[in-house]
Image (cartoon, one colour):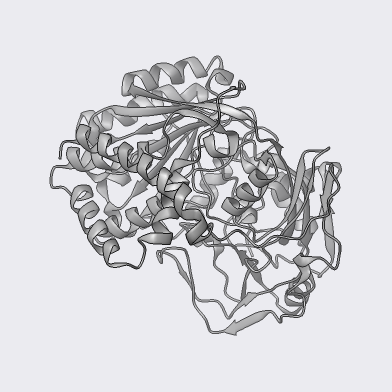
Length: 532
C-alpha cells in the first residue's frame, strides 16, 4: 500500500475508532482511572483530610527485598543493590532512610543510564501515588512523588486544569520527571522543574523539610536534584486553566528548520510550544506542530491518539487479532526499503498529532501507550539521547548534523524513528536545569542500532562526537544515555566532568554546596555527579 493511501486509511480508522468508542464505553467501561484522593467540595480549594483516601494504605508494610535486581523500563540498565524497597507512606520512607547508610531513589525507571543504581538500598516511591489537592485560586496542584505524569494530567483535565508544559513521554513518575528536568517544548514555562512551587523531602537524618523559593539555592538545587539530596515525597506544581487551543500541523524541510532556528536566536518567544519531527531516512522531510494559546470557539476534539490507544487495550490486546495486527504493522515498519519504513513510522506518528481545536492537556504532544508498545515490539531495545544546544550555536550545530547525513558520514537508515526537536526556555529551573541560563534547542533521538549491532553504533558515535565538540557544546539530559560510552547506559566520570563543563563550574559548585548542606555524609550521592 502506498504511504499516501496508508495515511487516508489511517485517518478513516481513527474516525471509526472515535465513533466506536462513543458507542462502546457504556458496555466496556471507561479506561481505569488513576487512584486519587477523595476531595472536599470547596469550589476554590480542594484538599484531602488526613483520614482521606490518600492514606488508605497507611497500614500496609513497606516491601523490602534483599538481593533483588532492579531493571529500568526496558531492561537496558540492570542494578544489583543490597535491597529494593517500596514504601507506601512518608513514615516508612523515614524509617528506611534512617536504617540504611546509602540510598538511591527511582521512579518508573524511564531512564537510560546507571545514575539510578545504588549498592545498598534502592527505593521506589511508586506506591505513593496519590494526587493530594488542587488550589484553584493559587493555580497549584500538590501530588505525591509516585504519581504517573499521565495520571496527573488526566486528574487535572477532569477538574478543568492542565500542566502548562509536559514531556512527550508521560509514563514516568512525576518526581522522576522533575528530578531530571524533563520537558516538553516551551520557551515560556521551561521544563517540569520550572513549575515546582514546593518540595517535601526526607533528608539523610530522617527529618522532613519543605523547600520553597525562600530557601534559595537549597530549593534551586532540589528542583533538578537527580536524586542526590534526599527522598522527594511530595511536590506542589503550577497549573493553569485547561483552555481551548489550536494545534497546527505543518510540513517543513531541513532548510526550513534551520531558518527557524536562526530566527529563534533573536526571538525565541515566537517558537513557543513548537515541535519538529525530523526523519533522517526521508532526506530532510519533517513535520512541525504548533500550539496556539489564543482561545477558539470551536468544540474541542477528543484526544484521538489517546482514545485509539485506550480502545486497543480494551478490545484488541491479548486477543487473536493482536498477533495479526502486530505482524502486519511489523512488516510495514521493517520494510527493507528504509524510506518506505520510515514513512510508515512517520504517518503513524502524525496520527497522534492531528491538527484541530483541543483542550490544552490534549493538544500538547504526548506519546501514547500503544505507540510505545508498537515501537518496542517491532524494533526492540534502544538507547535514547538528548542534547541541548545554546541558541547562538544551534543553527551551526544542527546544520552540521544534517551535513553528516548528506555526506553519508552518518547512515540515515539507522534512524527510522524521527528525531524530536524542541525549544526549551530556562523558566525557573533549578541549578542543574538543562536550560539554566538561557533558552536552548533540544535534539532527542532514539538509537535502536546499538542493540541490533551488539554494542556499537558508528552512526550514533559520530553524532555524539559532534554534540560534544565546540560546534555544539551540547548539554545532556540526566535521564538519557551517556555521551561517551558506546553502550549508553553506563555513565562514567567523563560524563560527570562533561556536565560540570557545560553547566559551568560556578553553578555546579553551588549545587554541590547545597547537596552537602542537606546531605553532609553523602547518603544519597550517586558517586558521579556527587561523589560518595
